[in-house]
Amino acid sequence: QQKVQQSPESLSVPEGGMASLNCTSSDRNFQYFWWYRQHSGEGPKALMSIFSDGDKKEGRFTAHLNKASLHVSLHIRDSQPSDSALYFCAARDSGTYQRFGTGTKLQVVP
Amino acid sequence: GGIITQTPKFLIGQEGQKLTLKCQQNFNHDTMYWYRQDSGKGLRLIYYSITENDLQKGDLSEGYDASREKKSSFSLTVTSAQKNEMAVFLCASSMTGGAWEQYFGPGTRLTVL
Image (cartoon, rainbow over all chains, first blue to last red; front, side):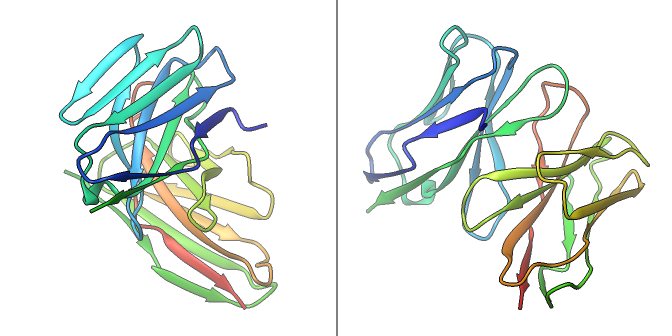
């Protein structure tokens, strides 16, 4: 059973628009959450982490975490063509290892 | 900053062949990982290692062996390549503990004829 589910599977937004990506986990032991971005032909790179309920903003990127509902989201404002990539949510408890989500393919259309 | 190097970049094998992929990191991280990614889809953990000579199975370990010869290197062996198999194998490393991000290499693309 996939412990981390992402939606939508793919997303297309116009340049300058807002992209919203969602992630839901099924394990209440998860304490640490990340968003990773993977451009074509490269390995994923961590975008940002969020460990506490609420919002965390880094430039054009804002992550939101609600542990009670096991939901984390990523919002990208003023989307750029360079933001076109595969985005992964990852979650981890205090032991073991990060569980990666199913991924959302984002396309920003000029 | 550090870097993760994976060799080879492309690997073509025959059905039933034993194939080895290598990974080196200079972050001085204790924990290293091997993932499989099928055609732009999600990452599935094959093996990870929290220190030299340690091996832990992930969700997809059947059909694979791994070896952590030293802190900086982690190898993955496909024990018997499956015909028409195509995937990208990604190596990653991190500091040990829950709050640390993973750093990924560029991947090895496997094709089995």
